[in-house]
Length: 337
Image 1 (cartoon, rainbow, N blue to C red):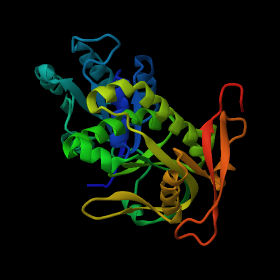
Image 2: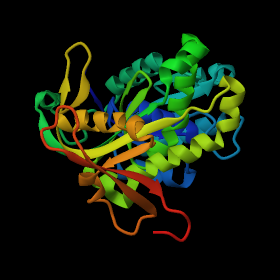
Image 3: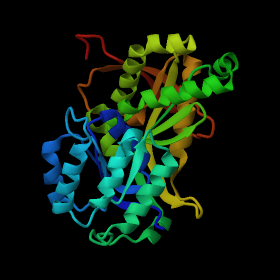
Image 4: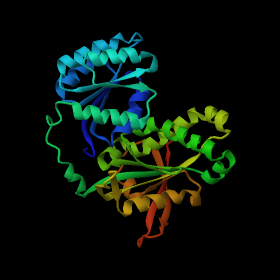
């Protein structure tokens, strides 16, 4: 089985589901395309070859009968007959899903889905696709070749996590982390970020350098998370009797990128940039701020964005021979640039 599959199209009118699936599947497919607008689907099918199409059985604005899935299944079979179609359906619609398989669907998955079951189902559907080689040839042995790339990294974690875990207990604390990571996902995706990994109470977010700098995505991602957590403060108070506070460090530079592992393959970045970003984030506690940015990143961000920066000074970071200048960055008040 290849470490990554080809191209998948996800069709659903629930943006939350599309975001979740985009994050889940981006490490397993070379390209993940999502669509919630019925008018654009036929154009997409004519424009690109998809080995797998994941289709909500009730897809169509306001649809509830389950028949809409059959209509879209027929359209897909006409326009892209060699694609494998997997239906997403509620438990009560399983009989309809089985009927859909008789009409050309490859398989179905019930909502809410189990991630491992979903991945297994999509892997099986990929194998059954008749267009596995219709795209440009993919040599999976290239996973072993490392390359140097320029990226932006953000290390973000919850403040006072040990104290919170002791107060809530490990089970409820895990629930808090799960809610927090889920609630900030929209902010990450909408600002072109990629979740590189979760490490305990910390999430590492990454951008190709151009994407992170464009419209100050890396900074605005952080501010968007701040806004989202303020919006959800009452629900966190009700459920956990607290509002999770967090801090972050931002830095950029060249790292080595490549796939590692045999039984389980994973994309890995390595280099001093990651260590430095982690240490920058750790300095937030010393200076009692929630966001620190390296000068090397700040100097490359577009001018005229609505934020202000205050120089902390030259900091001697552990493991760095030369001091690094850090800035505390905030959003500008209205009327201030």
